[in-house]
Length: 354
Length: 167
Image 1 (cartoon, rainbow over the protein chains, first blue to last red):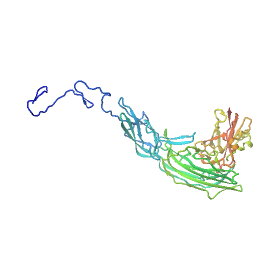
Image 2 (image 1 turned 30 degrees about the vertical axis):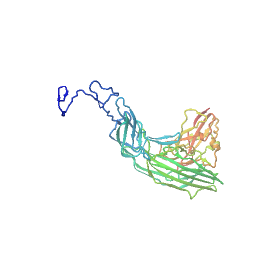
Image 3 (image 1 turned 60 degrees about the vertical axis):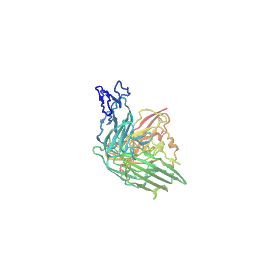
Image 4 (image 1 turned 45 degrees about the horizontal axis):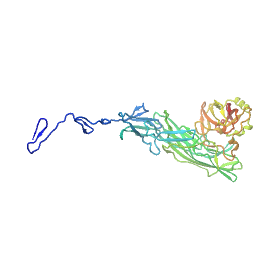
């Protein structure tokens, strides 16, 4: 067998030969050899895979790149992140997805906002907007190494992610003690009232003596908010007894008061025409803190539930507190639970009776 | 000191009221009502802001309702006079309410004011007075001297303001 200079082979006897062919200028396109005359036209033109590397910006679209870094923040501080990215021409983003630690826990330790509407008398929290390119949210409980990640979905089911870590500080050594006062009958300019304590120290019905250590560099402000869980008043005149209520919800306004301590001395006027009045109420007082930064929100530190039952009887124009009157308070519970309400009770709004 | 709205019919006239206020000795605290900037439309709720300022040289604790600007109308004596000096009629709520049912209830706390400090209360006048009739009215309020602090007894009176109710 012979091979000439052109590659032609001539067999002259039975045997075997190794043939090596050399092809210059052969183009391989998407796995197909297209040497010779022409290659097929491809659309889109083949290209190398794109390198998509999203970034996390702190402060919005013009913010600081914090990708891969660790940031120190305080609870209640407004955090505005922005998922930044660059895609090759012709490739579009399909979705944004954020993972924020604590945003799905119960209660959540990261929230979208705490919204109070004084006009409608509502207060509620919102979730972290995890599908927006620029989410705004708040950590509401301290914690180290809280890693937030941003995932960009793009092109043909492709995705890329970036992460940033937050160390979240807040008040520590939080506690609330709740000394209780006594039921009493007091006079006022228009008659008598049944009081659980009296508002002036040291006779308050219940005191909330809060203690906490603010994080370094953030003294902040301590706030209180109280929810009325139930309110039932009975009014007896002769043989007729009416059941009344002031309703439930936020106790007057938010905040109830500010500072490390608070108190409550609920009062109920005693119409001279009545012979007996009882008042049964349950409350939850929330201890909160806000850092005092632009755009901040108050964050819950915990709560105290407490309950009272007062019973007053009139005899011979004299009102007396009955022995079955009670008062108690549960111990302070540290919690990230927010006070949430859909109605409010304003002092001395007309009672609803039946 | 709680609620005196219904006693306005037999109260002193507003002129005498203002004269008394003007001639009072050094007061423990002052009450200043902010005057509405615009006439009020008949049927609209009238809410006034009252600034309480400690003008004494000692701390005074005031009993208030919860909140940054408490709604504390029942703590005040409110006087509303029409152009003829007559007391404005009581509101429908006061006229029709069942006197067996307590009118005054709720959470209370003390707000301590150091000398020179102030806080603001809100009073919904139309809760106590019917101001549906167009015309000019004069309004003043008074607050009892807080109890249990050896401050004496009596009331402190505010300035008076005029409001116009239009149709």
